[in-house]
Every structure is written in structure tokens, then in C-alpha cells.
Length: 114
Length: 116
Image (cartoon, rainbow over the protein chains, first blue to last red):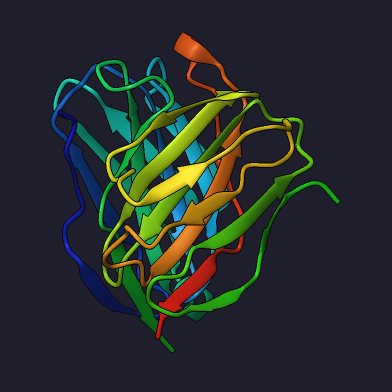
């Protein structure tokens, strides 16, 4: 059974700092890994999707990496801004679970202080 | 505008009542999903559907039911058998890409259900 862990549960940084969010998964037989942003009381917004054949994806100040052999993904945020404050979740779609199912981590809540 | 809509935004239910949450998408996606989110936690899959008139149970299907009569619509009914239904419910959709792994999930804005 796939298990996804995100540590830390919460992170507070000053504006302008570069930071890394972590996502670990137990089963490396995956189709893809997706990073989402969730603002309080809102739905999820997709940030980046990394296919199993890829090592990283970039969008603006965001860079996501994937290391299947170690069961880890990181989301790097450069030059953080107060508007980046949100909860970030990762989701893994695995071969060895029901087709179409993603397993989500509990998220990391990021606060960027002005 | 393409996207996923959910209604209502807030829903209140008395104990013993069934309620239905609406989810509509105009993205022409084959797959649709219902998730439940409790405070401080990630998402747990309730049901998903990869094609019209077919759906599968997720991890926490007990007390819930769904239908998929149209490609665009995937309503979720929370029945009186669901003992702790107060939660945030999220609907999502995606293409089905199989091994290529390109199936980004797109989410609706959510429905917050409260049992009175």
C-alpha cells in the first residue's frame, strides 16, 4: 500500500528566503507525482506534475524534483513571497493501487512573513 | 471558461438526511473523482469513475453513493449511513493517460458539509 509523507507539517520563513518542501513515498512503482497548492477553504491548484520518466519540472520560481529510487520528491521555491503562503500537498499515482487512484500526503503549511 | 464547478459551496444537513453534492466539468475529461478532506489532513478518495456508467470505490466509500450518467457530471450522495460526514468535499477530473503519466488532476472549489 502506497504511503505518502510530508515533513515538516508547518514551516515559517522570512520573505525572500529560498526553501524546500519534502515529499516521501514508500512504493517507487509510480506513474507520476503531482504538487498542489491549497489556500484556506479553497480547492487544490496544480503546480507541477512529474512523470515517472522525468527527474524534474520547473515553472517560474518553482522547481520540483523526483528520485524514484529513494522514494523522494522536493519542491523548491525561490525568493519566497507572502503570496506563497498556503498549504502544499503532493500526490502520487501508483501502479500497484487501483487504476486512477492517487495517494495524497497531509501537506506542509507554509507561512512567508513580510 | 473551462473548469470544474461544485455546488453548493456550503451545505448543512440534519442527522438522518441524505444530501447530494453536485460536480460538473466541461474539460471533456473521462475520469472524475470525489475526495474528502478533514482539518489538517490530506485528501482521501471516496469514489472515482473512468467512464460513463462505471465507477469504483475508493478508500472510504462506506456511507456514500455516486452516479455517472453523463460524462460531464459526477454527483455524490452522502447518506444517513455516513456516521461522521462533516468535512470538506472536493471533486476532481483528469484525462486517462495510463503509463505515460500525464494525467494532471484539476479540482473544483469544494463543498463544505456540516451536520447539525
